[in-house]
Every structure is written in C-alpha cells, then in structure tokens.
Image (tube, rainbow, N blue to C red; front, side):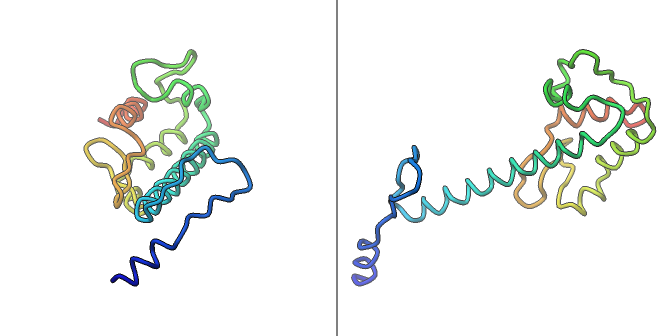
Length: 141
C-alpha cells in the first residue's frame, strides 16, 4: 500500500494547456473524474436541447422561436402565440410526444406529469411545460 501511495503522490496534473483556463486545478483524482463526468453530461444536455429545438422548428403551425423565448411556464405567452391548434399534423405530433410507449422507446418516461430520462431521472420537461402541451390539445385531459 505504501508503494501505491508513493506512486499516487508522484502523479501530477498536467497544467500545460493551449489556452488559458479559468477553471481551478483539481488535485483529487476522484473529484476530478466526477467533475469531468458532470461536464460530459452538461455537454450532452446542451446538445440534446439543441436537437429538440431544431426538431420543434420543423413542426408547422406554431412559432417555435417565440415559444422557446417565452418558455413553457404557462404563466406568460409570447405575443401572437395562440393556445389553439389548427393543424391536425401538429396535434398528431404532440400526441406522439406525450405517448408513454414512444417515450419509453426513447429512454424517457412520463412521471408525475414530467418527461424525464428513465435511468438518470434528468427532467426534460417540467410539470408546467407538459401541462402547457396538454392545454394545446383540447381532447387530452
């Protein structure tokens, strides 16, 4: 064990990076690995959000940029955003989005009116956002 401790103490974190980093150097290797894992998850979440926004922009019938800008809080709407759906295609898309079987196939679940990842339990849509989607569809209660 002394040999392992001696080898571990001899290891150093490489501080020579191409750019100037504002992040502090983490000496503890377990914490450093955990921070790296959190950074990877953050990057994946940012990429997933970008993919979702790009997918929403392909849906006809609503102005998604205004929807994203205003958020789906349910308290305030962007000007010109109606709560009635005129397009049957958009109605079908939202019904598919809220379908538990389709969510499960994608690794998501509808839990307590929230859409979240089935394994990590990271929430994609909060309760108010799901309620706002359901409010767009008069036939879904």
